[in-house]
Each structure stands twice: as structure tokens, then as C-alpha cells.
Image (tube, rainbow, N blue to C red):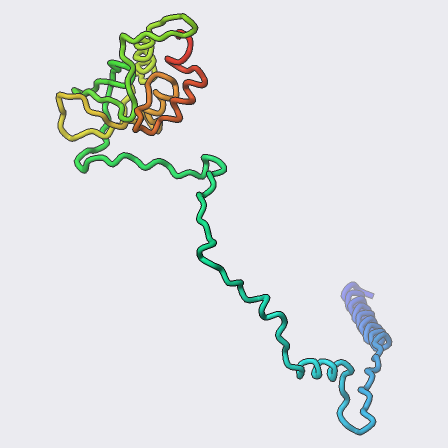
Length: 234
């Protein structure tokens, strides 16, 4: 038998085997499928339609009208306005929830200006670009002031000015100033980058907070931690 004949014979045998397998699968499925009998509903003895056992009970319950229960207890009691007393609100649990102090309103013509190469003339006063600026909200320490710490006297005024200059290092300050240069010193809020200059001076003990300023707590912290002029000679 040549090769093409053998190939045709193999294909025919494979087809017969596939057909036999399909027949076996169909016959097996027919044998495994078992129809379960579905119970017929039991007819009523009176020849009526079958009913569910719980339907009558539920229908009877829904036909019962709703009953009001303790209506007088639900109503709010009568209140006498003369017996109500207003008390003070409790203090906040922490300072985190307190509102931020409002910013000091500035004149309309004042603008935030970069003042380059500032030089401190005292602990809270500097000169830059022909202007003399006093940091608002703080009280500067005079350069001739001396401080005493445990009976040790030291020139805290000069040290405060030196600390301010050392912190500035000639970096430009953002300050709200009037558009024209005034020959008198002006009080203005300033910041170095994002740091409030007044807050830095008071918290480090190199300036005092004005009574009407917003740095009172920073001054108390500086006193408690003996920072700047409140501490030993530096």
C-alpha cells in the first residue's frame, strides 16, 4: 500500500473514532439526566384554588388598623422660657481649632516690595534701598541696652542687632511699604521667604512683642525657654 492510501485510511479511522465518541457522550448525557417530579399543589377540599398557609395570617394582620402607642410621651414637654439660663461657652480643647488672627489691613497704595541687601541698625530695624523699616508688631532692643542674667551683665542690645544681621545675611526681604520713599522710618510687616520676620525675632528673644501685637505668646515662650535677651550671655 502506497503512502497516500495509508493517509486516507488513517483519516477515515480517526473520523470513525470521533463519531463513536460523540455517540457515547450523547448516550451518557441521556442516562444521567433525571427528571425530578414536581409536586403538584394540593387542591382545596372545597375545589377552590390552593392557598399558602401563611397568606391568611398575614392578610389578617394587615387588615387590623394601626393603634397609637403613648402619644403623650412622644410629644415634647412644655418648656418655660424663664427657667432657661444661657451660660458661657466652654473654652476650646486646644489652640489648633482657634481662628488665625486677622491680618493688619494695609493702605490701598502699599505694595509688597523686595528690599535687597538689608542691614540691621537695631534688633528690629533695618535699612535697605534708601528706606528705614521697623518690623511692625514688635519693639526693638536698643543697641546700648544691657541685660542681667544671674547677676551677669552683658550687652544684649548689641548682641540682638548682631543676631538679626547674622540671620538676614544680606538676603532680600518682602515688605509692605508705601510706593514713595519717606525720610522717616515706617513700620511694615516683612518676611524672609515664608518666615515672618517679627515672629522669628520675638520667638528667639531678640525683640519684644507690642501690647497690641500678635506675638505675645511667642514672647512668653522665649521667656520660659530663656532665649535671646532672657537667657545667659551669648
